[in-house]
Length: 186
Length: 304
Image 1 (cartoon, rainbow over the protein chains, first blue to last red):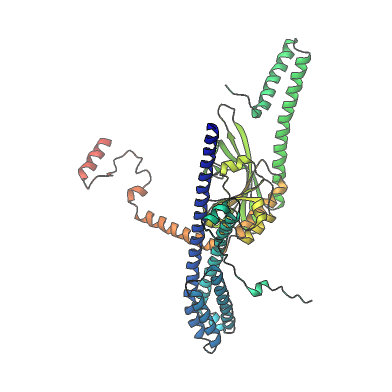
Image 2 (tube, rainbow over the protein chains, first blue to last red):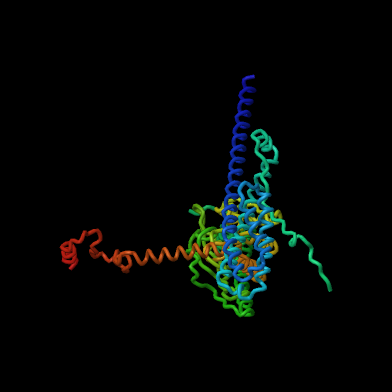
């Protein structure tokens, strides 16, 4: 009987140690996800800050393209609004990306604008920022994947449900043009 | 006293059986089963040694011809500064040298390929020669260290490098490669989908890839077949071409900052620190003297 109690005690201790380690692992992953999201947020903020200057530069050459400018401004305002979840932020950024695409399409029609140094510099910085956003998104999604996998895997899922750890949302773009299959005509 | 080990057996068998064969021949009494076995063992060991030397020579010849065919240069040995390289398999053992050195240009990038040889002794054992094949190309900028080890590599390699792995979003890539890096964010940035696709397509059995500083290298144990050289070069040149633009930008800026800092430090350094031999000439330099010129004169008198 004594040996049984000792063995039972050892088993309980092992389970408690494992549970503590599992809980700490989940906390660490959740913090990593939050930190990765803050890094993306910083890059997105930089992207939003570049847009007003870009719009003003294009306005100097194509002031009549009001609809395009208003669409970019509205999309930027929606994307800059605080309190969005990753999925909502992704939607706002997709709308902004489409609006910027139309703005650059307008710029294509003005050779003087395309040669403008300020415009070129802004365009370059915007491209660099979007590269960093894309890289940040991959890193964030990698952390989300790891957290979600850990939460859903047995037996850690027991600890996750006990302490209310929830799945995190991915930050994914939905570029309709990219998803559409190209039409090939011979 | 050397201990017997598997690596030493060939040498010991050749030596002992050779001695027995010679003794038996001169004494005339050891011919018979023992003498015959000794002679056969000596012949086999000697034959194996000769075979190894012939293979080494033939390998060098193949490399020389392959280099000439592609307009590259070949040298039996060269000073490449391999002793300064760090990380397995570099930095181990003694008598480190580069053999069968090929230099040239591949897809617009200068490369160097060589056989890295060193001698390694474990405990009291006789030093054994270790051979690795290395190919190097320059990186677009100074980069952080990143190791890509094929999952089929032996535990010895993984143990020497540290077995902690970084998983990425491609299951196929994770199956083929083990990613070792102390900065997970950098590894994920570096290994973007284009890079992973290239590494999956260019995966070579037993060949590891290392990004470190200003070079990207592929290395593997043993002397590689000459046909492997083009595939290795394709692998690492492809890596160099696919380093993500934002990674190159970020690390170029960091490198520029580092150079500016070093230049400023050099410009602001005291003259005594920049004078060659000032600290080793055993002459009183006045370091630490607080403007006391008499001390300088005393020191100069002592030295005369």
